[in-house]
Image 1 (cartoon, rainbow, N blue to C red):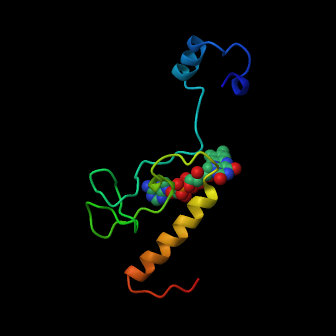
Image 2: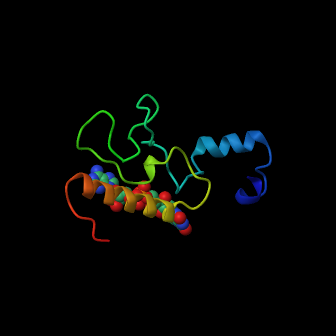
Length: 97
Ligand SMILES: Cc1cc2nc3c(=O)[nH]c(=O)nc-3n(C[C@H](O)[C@H](O)[C@H](O)COP(=O)(O)OP(=O)(O)OC[C@H]3O[C@@H](n4cnc5c(N)ncnc54)[C@H](O)[C@@H]3O)c2cc1C
């Protein structure tokens, strides 16, 4: 942490100050609507359908269970493509790509 934030941040006290002042941020927010078939622990099922409402799909990085610990964009593209194709089929359309 101190290597990225510069000198003077080696102590827990300084790290806490950084967190309090909101200097840290994240560009990889994930996990807000996690996917899973158990609706007690997940927002959408494995097809991307919301557990509690019909005809609501969620297709974005929020469906990952948590941050995947690497740059997520390509994984999000891949999962979104799979989910979108599944949604087209579910709605009775023909997947062409
Ligand atoms: C500065 C920066 C650098 C990054 N660099 C990389 C990188 O190098 N490599 C990498 O893999 N990842 C990188 N990321 C992360 C990556 O861009 C995100 O993790 C990814 O784009 C998230 O995809 P998403 O579909 O979940 O959300 P987003 O890409 O944010 O898409 C959400 C979409 O929903 C739309 N939206 C929001 N609210 C509404 C609404 N109410 N109604 C309709 N539409 C709405 C928004 O306009 C947006 O188009 C970076 C992110 C940032 C911010």
